[in-house]
Image 1 (cartoon, rainbow, N blue to C red):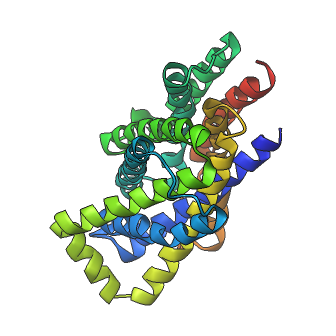
Image 2: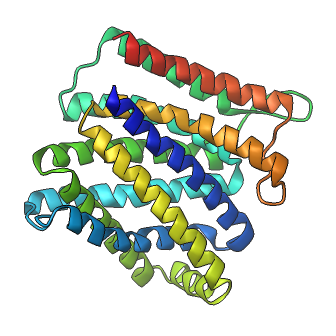
Length: 307
């Protein structure tokens, strides 16, 4: 089960980046956050390339077909971030992240069709439980304790982000098994950088907001974004390595622990740093999140130990 603990590193690090993203959106990029963070995240990936090259000097020896495939995977990664930021701008981090629990289900279905991985009856039951747990968080509790479906600006982008993430993971494994981990990571991040360059070149509003953000609060913005990307890329490396050790669906299922990490971090920061993070920590909201996370956790447990 070494792959399981390696895969858990990713969700914990991703949970940290969720709050850095939220801080950037609310404190520094209230009007232009999505495009600015998107460009920062994609362009800063260039600093990871020398590390991957150092780990494997043969990263350039990749077939042209696989480069094209990883180009799609890299663009999907940018798509995940774009959809996620749209939802995060409108909603709490601890709510948004729970929607990612649909990723393992989509990942398992995609791996079944694209990679030929087998799904057992228990895995199907486990995925159904995870879907049920995710559905719980799709409703919000208002002041009168009534349940109502959350805004489309939260649900639709997160469903799209989940699909992009699952497809990206499946594509990455298909190439990494043929090439290797470091070659695949190098070209995946290279394509993210090139996508960022394309956005900077052809999307004028994003470009202008990005340049404006650099001119104001440049020190704080650069520090937070560099820290954010370092943490995120470290999580990617851990998850990518886990992809090579276990089926995509199983690795993606370990990410059901990310909401747990996000919830704990959010509660702690709301109590001790309310000016930085302000999550809803009333009992009814906490219990809703705990129930949703617990149900998805049960699904994960069943899938891992009762195949």
